[in-house]
Image (cartoon, rainbow, N blue to C red; front, side, top):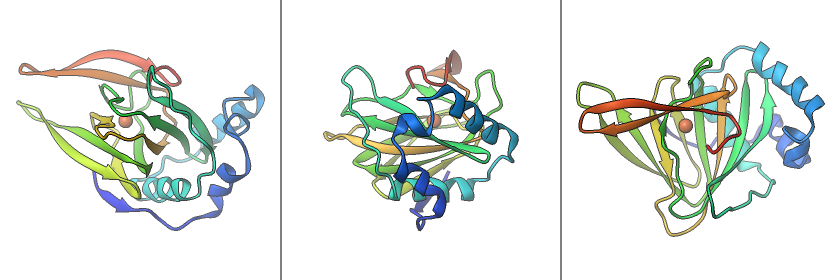
Amino acid sequence: MSIITTAAPSPAARLLDSAPAGAVLGGAAHSGAVHDSAVRDSAVLGGERLAALAGCYAANLTLRPRFTKGSRWARRVLAGPGHEAWLLAWLPGQGTDLHDHGGVALPAAAAVAVVSGLLTEYTVRPGDFPGLRRKPLAAGEVSVVDDRTVHAMRNDSDAPAVSLHVYSPGLEAMRTYLLDETGLAPSRIKRAGEDW
Ligand SMILES: [Fe+2]
């Protein structure tokens, strides 16, 4: 995992500028199928490319996320060759379980760009006695996660936060984990679109 300053805008970001979230993906089943095939049939992207895309999309984002009290808000907003992007909104105290990006599907690498606010990423250090590494992520920073990493993200601040996540290949499911003094244990499989 590395922290990278956001990249310069690219033409791909215009997708986010020009259409509301539902029209880009998820709102229309027929267009979603076209986009899904582009994600599925293209080559998987490497970490540097994912980081550049996440930074680019975050810097050019015009969609307005929603903040919901029950859980963090998440919406898939874009699909491109070999990747897809999700927009997430976090109120103070909201976060994910420990998870990977595989579950029952092909594992996905990811890059997370913080659009606004402050998030904290907790990454499991593998080994006989796994522990957690804590890393704050401020607006403009990007964290890259490989396809085997187990991590969690949380808004530990007292202000709302927004983040833009790019996955390659597309994120179909993730497996959650429990971590205690006995080690790391798989817990549940969550499908994309459920409570992330
Ligand atoms: Fe994740």
